[in-house]
Image (cartoon, protein in one colour):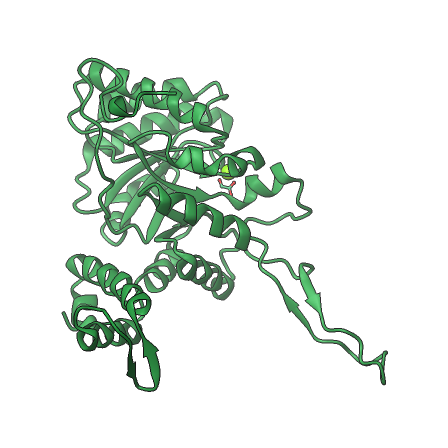
Length: 349
Ligand code: GLV
Ligand code: MG
């Protein structure tokens, strides 16, 4: 067990001091692009202008014979562009792959000061994060990187879920976790063939009517991801980091994508991945708190004063706990309003 006093010491001589807190930065959508695809690469500056986070993907969805091109493409894009207030992330290949070491070596070495967060897939336990932590420190020191690169882990194996609390607290570099429903489904031996979202077979059914046992019985589809998202959110918040929903693969089903994103938002996630430009707007809409809720929350805060006691507002009981919920809503709205003038006007700040 590492001495708690050393937790915030750099893991290599010359590496930057680890961050004491992970600052909240808007990250409603983590927009994925394939840096080996010249058409996508050319669109990066215009897409970054409307995103909170843009991520160069080097892992799954990049063909094996394009891995080097993707890595080099990412480095070039990072060097040649100024991303303004859009964060630049990359998803590297998994720790057991033949590409991980070259990915981090080249990226930290050449553009370590431009990359905010490295997303590490298929993290199974704190040991994976400890390895990445030390390696990044060595590479940061070697390249003279000034600010520590943060780490985001994808929760996409059964073992990873079993160890989620330890993963979330494994290093001061930990920025957040994303649910990876596609790999997680495979790892858990779930009987699905989709990338996220619901499944019509996962349902509960009303009891039969004893007087009419053959009458149709109502069913309600259940949420396959509820348990994992809720567990991930608790692990993240308990460790001062952020939770995200991952990919929604049915690009044409914008309605179900919005539902999936909203479930994650309501459960405590701060953003989701977007795999196609159409999902950027969905994420922006869903992960910006609704205007009527923000105005209501502002009203509760105003009327509650110091938050103590219980008052009735429009027939609803308010106390310390609702006051705190309202503060979460208004706090998020205020931070997003700083970035987005339309939201600022709508929220009336
Ligand atoms: C994401 O990487 C997933 O496997 O869902
Ligand atoms: Mg995956």
